Image 1 (cartoon, rainbow, N blue to C red):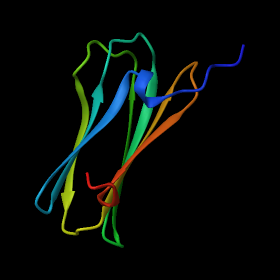
Image 2 (image 1 turned 90 degrees about the vertical axis):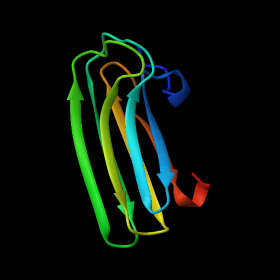
Image 3 (image 1 turned 180 degrees about the vertical axis):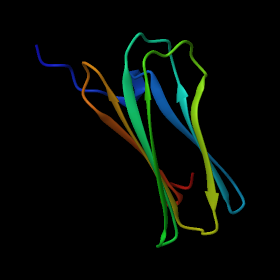
Image 4 (image 1 turned 45 degrees about the horizontal axis):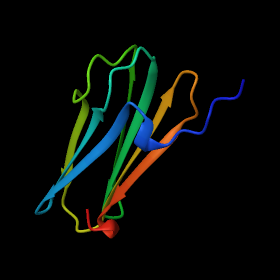
Length: 103
């Protein structure tokens, strides 16, 4: 059986981004509990040369609202954050936030 397409709105992991002046804070947050192992990669870019990437895995998600990862960066008016989530038995999905969206 082929897994159904993943939509970020019905997935147990999401991305919350807040900007306060030049500082950007990105949080990977659980939206529901899930006995689903998986992994995620969060990539940030500030300006044209300041890039970071973090990868993490999980065996289960205990409850909604848990912060699974938290990064802070800044120094440029142009920035982007990309979260790619892979959960066993589901299609991968990506969430992108950027300064171009007025985030």
